[in-house]
Length: 466
Image 1 (tube, helix red, strand yellow):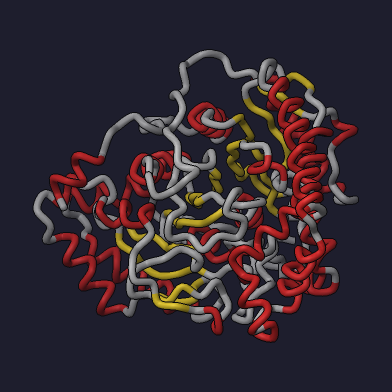
Image 2: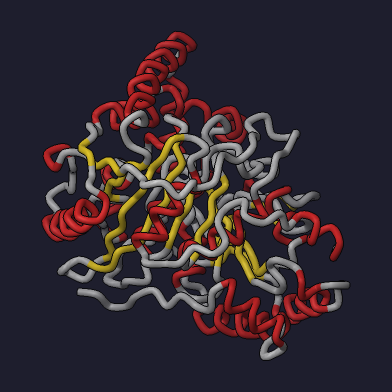
């Protein structure tokens, strides 16, 4: 049964109102965050944090900027997954022997800092961002806020926990195969994976560079919107960078769902019942159209059962050869599995993926958004440690295909099952339909959407106040 639940703290909007009105301040918020983190101790959420006095000093610096109160994220605290660079801070990827001190801040994070956000620290992850469960770390293994020794999910385990614990209103994560959406589902928060290229990945140590996305964890769609409005920007240093798509046009959104017989819950009847209950409500509100999940799942199978696992060796092959004992055993096994693939395998897989992309493209002629479970079941830490590959594959059943098929997606928390475990729906859309997908998510959460993606150009305000 449920032991705990998310305790999401003040939203971005609430923090801004407090800071702008003077009822609160960035330094007071910084003190609250530092105290909350200290009170938890080492629970596997953070790998490093800014020391309390330094955090207060950084907050005071933000307060002293000209025009500070007009900044879009004035004094709002946030965490960064420890695979993304922050100047002067070690980037470790949860592998101490791999660590280096970054000499520049990733552009996506720099935009947040320029917008007045307050950097708190680096969050835990599955080592080398390889995993969806949160147990592949030499540090403290994090647990879900729902208790019961349930995994936190990964690889962005700490980013989800930092938000679910109410320590920060948003955290920067990544999502190559579900790394942002799975931990969001397991901790009852929102995990948004934008279309590839909308947020610069410069300064991110790549897992699979052709698939990587920087993503956002938050407690509300409004918070996601506000953060994306700052982070989304073209970057000529990122070969995958592209402009955002159109905003939601106000028209009826056509929602697709897989036939019930194609859904997989791995024997978890509670999760199945919860999702089917949600499906019934969704059909009443949107009149859903059935869409086969087969081509999506076929694409997902290519990720770890095909040559894309070899792409991780572009970044980590030398370290694997020189320091194999420094790598978590499961991660080491996965990296080595990439060594068996040939160029012929890669081209065959690329051709097969292109065929599947063509099939999926026809799906979007009939629906705008596809609704599926984010995860089909949950696991305890012990269950994952006993079967690390099998459990991980099940966790990625609905997420592995996302970036291969160039989709965007959001994990939407919907409550708990009859047994007290979290369940979440995932909304998926074709590339650059991000705003429409977020609109449907806001509707599901009965959340007014006052700051849609791209509604305001904050860049000028950032430059004027810098």
